[in-house]
Length: 76
Image (cartoon, rainbow, N blue to C red):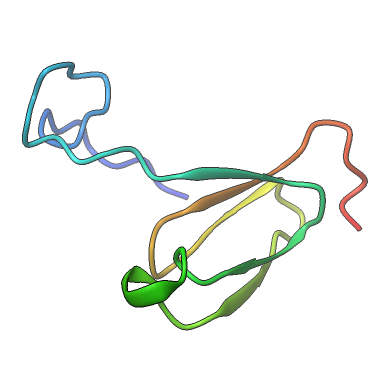
């Protein structure tokens, strides 16, 4: 993954900026295979499934949720 350039409007370490975007949700998983629906309901998105492969995280292409493999989890 490439790092986005620094931008104060999206920088989560800029306290007090009312226009800063909230940080994406991070979900700790015991498995390398995850399912995301964006939170369901009217604000959700179609159900998608991801596999972390060789990495210990994956990011949802719809809602930017970041799924992170729990420390010590075997990934199955």
